[in-house]
Image (cartoon, helix red, strand yellow):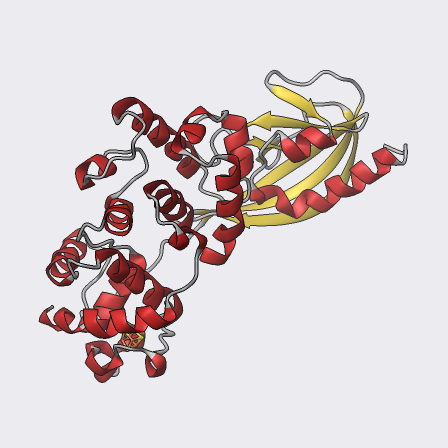
Length: 347
Ligand code: SF4
């Protein structure tokens, strides 16, 4: 790990010239850094940009976030996935209001105590927004470090992660810790790419990179084999009546908690609402540990009655009020066709 001492200087020189221009970097207020880091968890920068800008337009302060209604918040997050992040974000905003008098805490331990904030995010906020020399270690950083030091151990092991974190603590520059952490993020995202595809020839630290010098960069980091995803065959009913569609809310806990959906269950599942049923297509959605294979039918409901907790949503409510996860994006075309038919009086 002594190897790491050689990392900061060339990395920071490179960062000065090559830092990505990102909206949260132009004004690294704690609220901005925090929202961006939460959005970026498990999500690519390109996907986050539009969400981040819209989120801050609607909720420019931590107080606005604390007061926002749950449905509005979910609507702002719709399509970004991992919705518990949004709930925790709001929980944490309320903590900031109640426990810290509305001022974002500056001490690492206090930041770490906020809902949804782990070691990585706390390190990112403490270093970028408050200039504290604390490393932010995520999968990108583990990859860069394991390659740079030629470390062939399994980086998913807690002990290995801790050792890498401790080693980074020793080399993180005290004067520009935020730049160092962001430089590591940028290097991991743009040069030291995952899945065996690092761009070593254009890397600013290749001269000192053990993995590269030993020709092992592509084989690092070492990780245990991935578990297979569980497949689920699901039946989805898009139930329609008088220009409205039936939606129901998912349970408060678990996958896609609290979001709205077209009623769906594991196959086989007879529709609990009577009406003419027509096959409209199949779709799939991949979650981290699960894959949904969905077969969808439209149902022209005979009556208004719906099972308890289900609602009828018109086009505007479907678009603006109810947050539907992107798992159902594969059926958007069905709804768009139906709304069009309704507009033309055929629905
Ligand atoms: Fe990563 Fe290659 Fe750079 Fe080493 S030389 S840090 S493996 S991109």
